Length: 580
Image 1 (cartoon, rainbow, N blue to C red):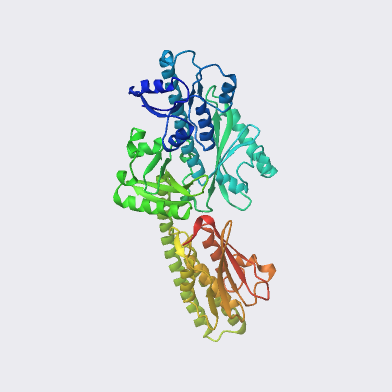
Image 2 (cartoon, helix red, strand yellow):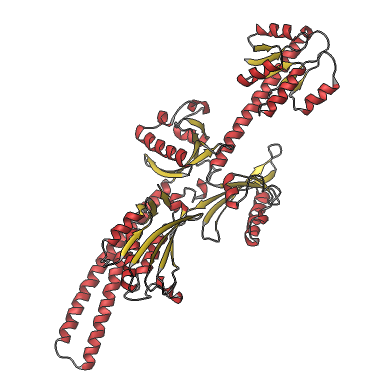
């Protein structure tokens, strides 16, 4: 049914409205003038307005309020001024009948039908555009569009924030305006390739700060002649050394090839939109079938509870969340992205991108099994070597008891030192072989530091930890990192009285600092101390620390002042820490 607001401000409109009232095709609401029409237009939704000059004023006021209503304008005589004003105001339809309105009834009906159809089409297109933009803006990826000259045509908010730009300030700018010459030449070559071949291009690149990005270039075609008019670019940040947390490592799983389920839910986990791939996974044939349904309606209770918790957390924090789950023999990775109101910034929905990572999990399991077998072999070999070293030491000590000559004694003592060194090195391999054996997990940093400190004789040294509720995604051997830091400070720091741990957030992540008031590290040795074999004893402790941290993308540097104490800084990227 077509809803029509009739403003009876010209002769004949009252009778015309009365004639339409009995028609099942139209729902008629009549009013006598502009004030009443404004009130009704604000409280009800109409497909079209039929009126004289008052309708033009109504349309103007509604347009200022962000609402557009198609107008069928009636005038008893030709009025060029009124016509020009209506056109300039963006009116959808104008009708200037000649003679009695009764004679124009069918013509007017057709006008009303066309106006209503056009409005509904525009409303539908606006909804689809809003839905599309909400998905684009909710993604934790940089999404932007450039023309043949690499001039920006569009940027989502994520890319604007990465460039440090406000909305609209990119217009008229090119890729070169924001990037180095080398990076620009590389980007331009990819865009030219898409324009020349019409095929999508994927690339992985490293930023200057070591961050990895996976970038895809998609052709944008003219719907009339299929010519390429632009290139759409999706750039995804890959957490360092945490490929398993990123579902798009394989090109066939990239968005655009239909491999990812994408859907949007509200706070109550009610579906707002679902892409064809996810409809297929759910076994839904018609898009309308999911309308009004919640996640619980289509999934088991246990899965619903986990899903609801993550959605609730995204609504509360406004931050992207990840999780993995298993369905039958398949493994999936999900990314939950907040959808914000473009005016208020409030989270109004959550977009979920779900990717099948079964192949990745199978590869991971096979690698773990291979690693387990290698570790077993290493353990047996190490056990045999240590037994032989024990026997060797016994024979050397027996030889030293037989009153050897001075030269022989010196050689025997050197043999013991070498045997001890080999023993230390073999013991180190026991620690080193455990790195990466188990999957990384979320760990409370304060708790890890406290546990490590309990294993060390702190003597009279005070330990201070200036933070809590900091969790990092790291190898289970993380405790070894803090154990070695504290042990090194106690053993080599001189007369220290205090070891302090602190945490500092910044744009790239968070830095955990371990510092003491001892002698410190000479400038010439700040990098050498992390090299295997450098320093006292085996020279393996700090080397081991760097290796453990690097598994999930963390790094460590020494930035203290020699003579005032050591200062070790552990850099933790955004993707692998959380502060509750």
